[in-house]
Image (tube, rainbow, N blue to C red; front, side, top):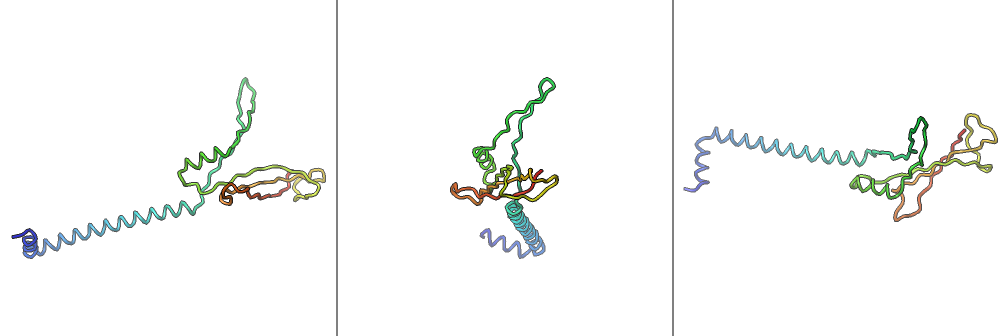
Amino acid sequence: MGIFRRAALYLARKKGKAALLFLIFFLVSALLLICFSILEGTKQAAGDLRSNIGAAFYIRPYAQMTLKDGGISEGATPVISQRSIDEVVSTARGQVKAYNTEHYGYVKSEQLHFLPGAGDNAASNMGQVTAVRDSGLTVFSAPARIHTDMQKTT
């Protein structure tokens, strides 16, 4: 008598045990299936959230200040080079999709008239100019797009 025939005869004799065993295996497999479905769903939701949330961090260079003999001396302001940006992007292992660089400057012009601020007079016609470079807009080292924001500064 083969093993499968013997198993079928046992299950036919013990119907209550067979039904209970079937129910237990069914519940365990259904719960495992639900757990793996939830796990995959949360992984996908976390990935979508990471890509859509637009998380940001800032790298700002500050001048090195040292205190020596009761006096403060200021060193040179470090420069964030393209090499430094490339190191950050490579360290992030593909999580950084794009980066923006901002450069600020002040201009004084007789042809441009800035929005007046506090303490405005004809001699102080200065404004802040902001240049923004979005790496998502540049392809194959194309020239950076420049956005200027003119505000009156005093």
